[in-house]
Length: 256
Image (tube, rainbow, N blue to C red; front, side, top):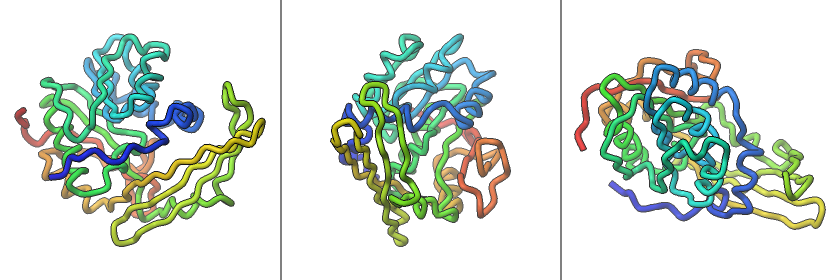
């Protein structure tokens, strides 16, 4: 099983690009859903925690660990309000081993899709199984390939205006191509700073995995799903749903 680290994505590794992350990915329905799941949890593991907004938001009265492979993301996480209450770990979700278990494990923000092979996705799910309490719960999200979200990631459809706290007005857009055989979408993210015309660009890849394949991977990891949602408002999953969101727990106790 491959656990070689992928080439660093500038969106997460370049401090200039990372400074846009919270502008594009603020607190939303996904965070509200996870906060609801965490209500009864005394310990939370946030895999792929990014800049740590969710982990820090859950840290009052709980033991929270945030894991991410990107040092630039964790630098923001450590500085944010509440960041001192979280144990931040620079590591990969496929092979991190913390030697303990948690009541709730999160892998959200479509972080699961950065794993581009079934082997790497299986490794991330095995990490969840190895760290989940017997009565604990997990949740992750992956965009439904049936919704073909990449069709909206064109310059014409994705162009938007952002107000950066230090760079001022910024024009942003995406462009994307889909490989049907692998399910991998390669997309570009562009930020043009209007004040000086400087442009920042990153090329990224994510995998769109069908629900049937996710079902097999989850079962092979020793996990089960109690609910399949199609959005963060808890609508049941259908073939036309935008998201695939499994919530579940352990089938059996995995050992370290």
